[in-house]
Length: 334
Image (tube, rainbow, N blue to C red):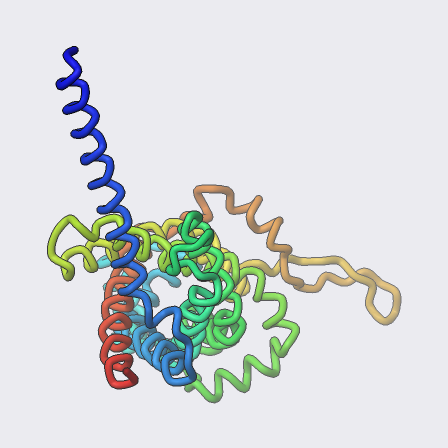
């Protein structure tokens, strides 16, 4: 190759590489600028994140109560036709239309509190980790986001657990079906108490931690990956749909365990000695590990089709509502 040709080739490569580096830096700078509000934490911004998250979860879970009832009934009862519509019709036939709204009070209260903690602490942990600052945490973005979301959900689920237990009992336990929220809560406190809540925490975490970690982390990563593809609203909605599908499948085994645990289906007969020394059979909760073995992979995925629709609906509505309310509140704070 002539000297002039080699110089031209080297110059062209240098220019191309410089443009690539410039594009990468521009994308990183844009991402950092877009997330500047995440890094700057004040009482006002943190409150905005929490309020937006609480309202997003309140609205999304509230709208999907009938689907949640169908999903829970599928996991603890037998139906000849397990399609979503068929199960809904059978529930109405057995118990009336009102049965599709069972547990709505627990759902509204529980998920407002859980959503406030989930999104509020997620944004706080993101800022503290420096995941959007372009530092070392940004080099492990997916892992950092998963850890931030999982940590936030550990806090949120601690508040959600007793209310979710009451909801499931209202839907699946006939002795709770006719009770209002406050009566059901009193009965739950008498029968389960703090011990019941503590015993259910690991099962709740098995459902909610994978759900939130996959939902929030995948949504953030997908939005960033598709940022240059097309319209922002289309990207946001598409990312939310994919995040919902992933979150549903990741948390399905834990969701089944939670429903089985709170419906009483994990109770087994245990032989103990009574006050006179004679053997007596009593019902005691089956261990989580034994339940996993008994159900097996197929059993743990029971109702996944109904839940896929249910969770994807929740996630899409929740993320879009949260993003809109958060932007509106932050604009006022700014």
